[in-house]
Amino acid sequence: MSEGDWESMKNLVDPTAVHFEGYEAGLGLKEDGSPYRVLYTPSWLGDDYQVVANGLLHAQLGKAGVEVTTISGDLGAANQVRAIEDAIATGQYDAIILQPLNPQTIAVAVDKAVAAGIDVYSWVTTPNTEEYTGFAGYDADLVETNGQVGTKLVELAEAAGATEENPYLVLEIWGGRSYPTSQTRHSGVHKGIGDSKIVKVIETADTDGNPDTVIRAIQDAFAQYPGIQAMYPHWGDASSFEEGLRSVGRLADKGEDGHVVVFLQDIDKSMLGGMRDGVFDYTLSNGPWPQIDLVMKMFLWHTVLKQPLGDGADLPKDVYLPMPLLTGEQLYTPEGQLFGASVAFADMPLGKWDVWPVLDTTSVGYPVPTLAARKTLLGY
Image (cartoon, rainbow, N blue to C red):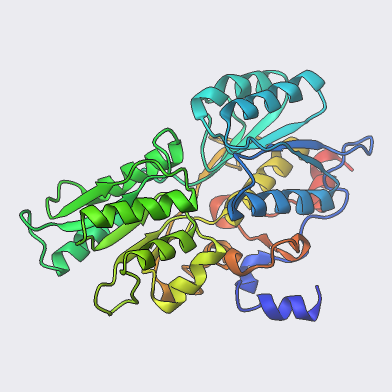
């Protein structure tokens, strides 16, 4: 790594929680010297989440000798199904990695792939079947995950002196009611609110995460409810939240009159300035780096090194990562650097995937696969 790259990165990640060398050449080759082949089918490639995942898969698995092919779902569940069915028909792939747009729609295709001898690894969302090979991600539908937002909203309402007659007004910006990600995030927040009557949630129509639609949703909501005190979006593009608040005259830093408390969900580069400056108050830390890093380890341990995943095995089949609720002051603390990466990824250089370190995920059961492990386990 060049001195310049290291200089820009060294304050972003905990050096004790990463493995800079990455995967070794030859780790991802079969006994006959041919490469393992992976099909990656993301939901789409229009945000940092998927760009990071795709870049790391190609660069890091590629270094090990694995060939990765990306076929984007382009926000169409049927596109992902076709990609998987084509993979089965060609017989060219050893594994599939995906983020399902629709867990129910994808389930039959996943079952067919596994039956055909193709391992299937999922991240963000699990397919609606037990046949998938491995999963790494988050469960937003819990009090200890997205429920933290609901709990904090109740605290804010109590501090503001809200009552059942004069409740604390919260704007919930829907990503899409048909998307499992939005559904679980919505459910988790409301579990945190519980039966409190001093918080009133105002829900927008679906925005699909489109920045222009998000801005219009904010404008419409504030026109009807000018007293909105907090805002929670299902999906990320912090710049659209900032512009939406500016357009209704409510963009103010913490402590200033008219400040709207903003909770962010998906971390991206546009949120960093607002978090540091105090425009945004909280973020649920669930970046793509830890998830896709775990998926790569699962693939290497199971598909390549033939190690079992699941109950009773040394390596788990499902890993649900913790989701810390962070303030701007906590971004670069150990809590904010989940495995060295949860928030830091937003400052890492896009495109320079070779300098993104492999994470130390031993605490959740996944050490870094090595060439030495290959030689021992496969008898080389």
